[in-house]
Image (cartoon, rainbow, N blue to C red):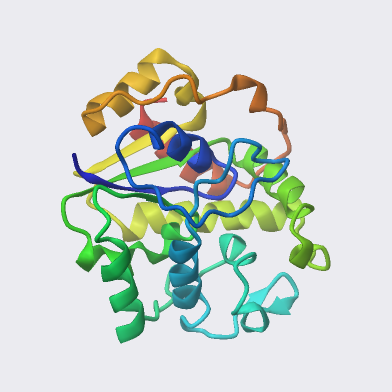
Length: 250
């Protein structure tokens, strides 16, 4: 049974997928982000993982990239903001001995299944230490994802004073998946899957075959597909979405 990293922009189905694997023999962590209305079944996102990734992100160059009208370094100690960071494709990822040791420590708990939207950016820092590891990249329509990101932002107390509009959310979606497509290849041990495929036997069979296990089909709940949006998205984002759909056979 290989280890697993789940990658995808926030509000794209990463929690649903991790929840399905929670009872499948994986260690998915235990220091979880609390339940919220937007994720009533849980996030399955270990705070130790997100804190490591936040330290990478908030110390990466350039250190003072504009973030929603603020400077991201003002929030470097927050575990609430990193999932909506916008990181340029040419950014230089930060790492140090402490980060490396923390990564080595948490990946001892094999077979692990860790998920975090920040992985879209930070996987290159983790990859030298990841042995016998598969990757699943999950995504959904950028318009729907952006609308869901804005909705969830309202549940974060720290974020109530931060403006997150639709165009910025779409930009975050685009950058995250551009990093996946352009920075993390080759994809010989990757599976790409659309969120909607989790609600089909054919889609779940692909996950089963890729992981060599039977995922928990009782966890997923189609009633939680509540966000809808058909707003315009730019052509650059459309092209990224098309590439992901092609890789997912969707």
